[in-house]
Image (cartoon, rainbow, N blue to C red; front, side, top):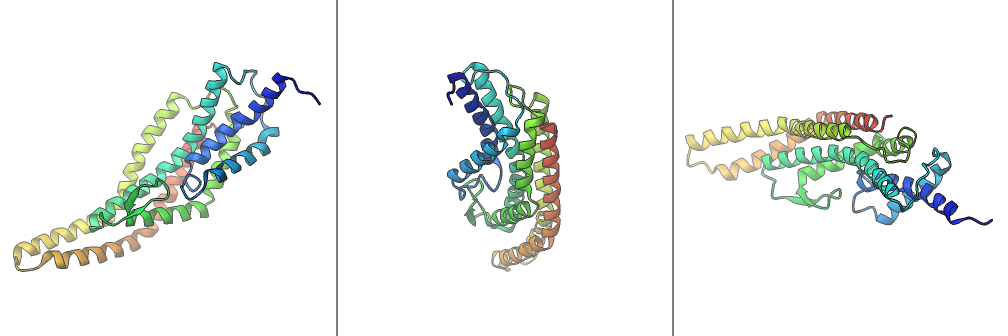
Length: 257
């Protein structure tokens, strides 16, 4: 069977444009975007999923692949995939922010570990929160749900130059601001309790100057902080699940699902 150059380019475009949307999602979504997952694994997953859904895609627009319009279509597909994963990534960023705030309140700001999500040094408490949030994310099948939503988006947002509009981008900005406020609320019970403890130690230091406040205050603050982190963990997990639900609602709104 002989193929003309135009037919060959059409088949390549039918593969490349969906691949860009799917691979961009794998680059930005938590769990798959960590450095522990090789880029080769992400690429293989994206290629396999693309090959599976190719026969199910709606007809492509009659656009040359290497034209300006084709280039803009490629950018649009990439932005759709990146945005879908980035929204979920913001939820994890809020959890890390809460862990950093708690660690600083406990005096553990100097105790650092490498965050597999970003590759940056973060406090130990933030890393503990990240690991727990990742386990909750997996247990809720959050990664599978996001993949399904991106695949369904080919029906509601067919391959073309139409992607996420300005109103959608603005809604992401507004929602991200609320999300980090939610991250601060996650840390607020522990931070407020430790602040009260520090105030008590400050009053004690003024009343009894001979008291070695640093040798007593740090162990007490550390142990109380650990206890508060343990006691508030169920509320943190419930709040994290709620933020994930809001994230998927926003993704569904942007993708017209």
